[in-house]
Length: 535
Image 1 (cartoon, rainbow, N blue to C red):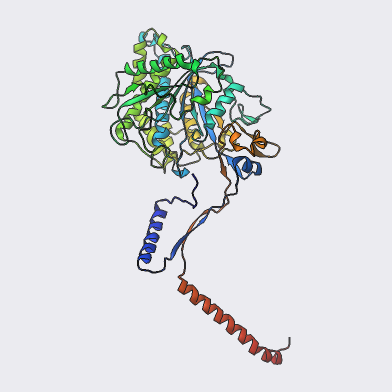
Image 2: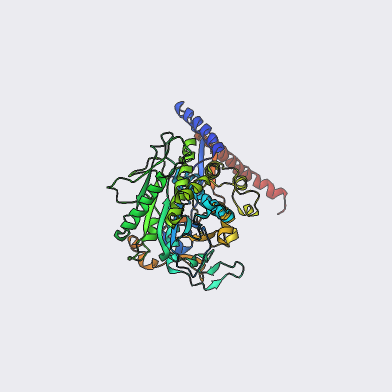
């Protein structure tokens, strides 16, 4: 939506100053006096036209960032083992990008997925270190039929650029023209922060489980009951049976759980039968790249049925959830962990119920709540918050921001992996520290930028593939291309007091009088000067 005027958000101190000045102006207006206080906006943007034009002129940059992915056991490039892909969105948005906290959309789902990953990793470690018969009857994560892969996707609020780029690269692989001599698994041209994704092909993925917004569960705050809806994909007809089976598995495993962190147990259920589409989801990005013959199960777990319960979708007001809803994140994490284990083939264990109970016991509710607060509440102490979660780990020094609560994706830049900062850096370090012993590599970054945008290394700027053909017909572009203008230095807002018209008139009059007197003085003094002073 276009507005015909500038909008600037002020911080607390700035808001108080603006409020006082506005009150003075309002009182002056009531008294019929001059309104003295004004604001001057200085935010020049270099870009104009559409994204194709500004990228061509190098006056804007593509919106994007870095996704983070990992696996729960070791990579093997020669293995054709099937993959269960678990995803969550990393980013959010709001009218004011600096205020995109996204407590429900989508930090709630992200935190639940991270809690599930931690529980499964702890369960797997316990199996490796235990010699009890009950533990030995459970399949470990490297013994189950399918590999569990986790992708936390960036840029999903801007054309699903993270999932679309990741799916495209998993399908096409990589021909690295210039490997990095400094970082072993980085490709300089074409740019890839990590080449580890080449160990997995898109066709190995036979199940996709996405954890969406699940923070509005409950009857308090912005809640709307204790139902958790398991949506299945209707995008491709040949995925119907696999998606229905995965959906039923989610319902069965959640209902068999006897554990609950909150006073109101969750009710996993299916959405309205008439609903033929998913909530906002990354799933189509992967399914659209799959061969038509593949049968892929795909489900999306959400707190909403056919419409959002939460009115603050992608709003700056989506900043928190209640204490009981925090506890229910633990219950969702428990069910997701069970589902991932079952979907990967854990149901073949000799003692399935015992294995699921063991997974339940590894869900750390206190840790999940701490993660949620770190991602949404602690705006001033991001570094300390990160250290409290991961301990005094040296990797925490890579964080370049004290605020882990801003989840706007920003613009995409080609940088060396150690220079990636902010929220993606935290997630990468968090997962790497957790999983390095299990998978041997920890975690990896993946570029999250629109697949139709490529970098011209010769001209040192971005361009849109086929942009010349589309420049006169923007509607033909296969995706909406998001860019952000380059900004000038020294941008900001200036509040100041202007003089009243009467004062301005007096100053102008005095200036004219002084100028006239100076002129007359010079005219009458000229003969005297010429007579008495040699020039």
